[in-house]
Length: 131
Image (tube, rainbow, N blue to C red; front, side, top):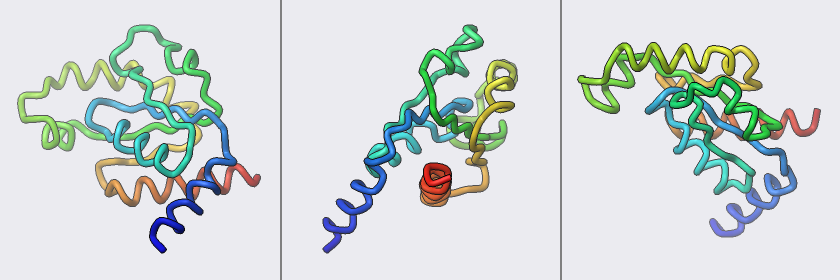
């Protein structure tokens, strides 16, 4: 029975072939969310905009849906180590500011568990597909 439920979920999401691009600062959960969405059958991809000085890198990924993940410096340091540079975090936030301004969905990974982020993204994607 669990296989059937997973297969059903996969089939439902599979019909949604929009290209979903996930952006956010380091350690915000981009890879985690993208992997989970792919397991649900979505066409999800990570964009490393936070590392690039190419301001429109995320646009070159051709998103139909843009999901941005928030994280603050204390949470980032908790996940990656206390020596994480504040200057690097600020630079990443500056590079991402234009993306956050146009994102279709913003999730705060400081306060949301992985499971909640996946559930909210999945629910939002299903609602927006039927709109």
